[in-house]
Length: 251
Image (tube, rainbow, N blue to C red; front, side):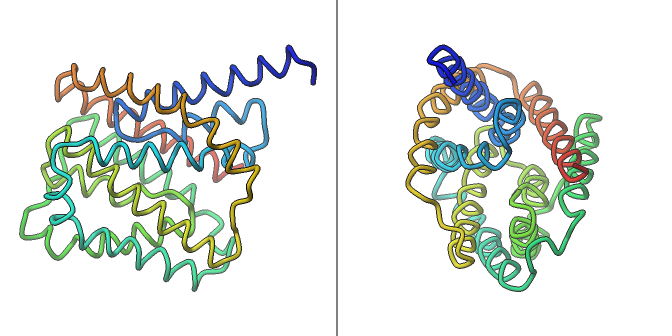
C-alpha cells in the first residue's frame, strides 16, 4: 500500500471513529456498531474489533463520569452491576466457546422488537418495588449474554429505560453498566487466555482521540434536544444495533 493509500485508509478510520463517537454521545450507545460496520469495509472484522478496545472502554468511562448522579446511580443499581459481573464470569467459565450458535441473531431480534415497541410509544415501566428484586436477575442475565455474545444491552438497557430515569441519568446509567460489563468481559477473556498484545493496544489508542472528539460533539447536541427527540433517537439507535446483530449472527 503506497503513501497515498495509507493516508486515505487512516483518514477513513479517523472519520469512522468520529461518527461512532458522535452517535454514542447523542444516544449513549452504538459506538461498536457504527465502527465495526464501517471498518468492515476496509479490514477484517477481527482487526476492526481490536481497534475498538480503547475507544469503547474510555468513552464508557467518560460517559459514566460526565453525568449528574454517579453516586446515586451506583447505590441504586449495584445489585444489577454485581449480577453482571457474576453472570459474565460464571457463564464464561461454564459455556464452551461457540456453544450457542444462534445467540447473536436471537439477541438482535429481541433488540429490534424492543426498539419497535419504544418507537410506537408503548412505554415499558418497572415499579420501584419490582425493581429491587428484579435488578440482580437483570444483571445475571445480561452478564450471561455478554459472556456468550460480547454484547451487553439485553435486558439491561430495557430495564434501565423502564425504571424512570431522566435523559441524562439514563445516559450515565448506560455508561456505568457498559463499563462494568466491559471490565467483567475483559477479566473473563484474560482467564481464558485471550490477552491483548502491545501492537493491538497501540493501534486502538490511536483511534481514541477521534472517538472522544465525536463523542464530545454528540454530547453537545444531546444537551440541546428535547427529551422526546432524545427518546426517538435512542430507540432508532437500538433498532440499528439490533439489525446489525441479527445480520451478524446469520453470516
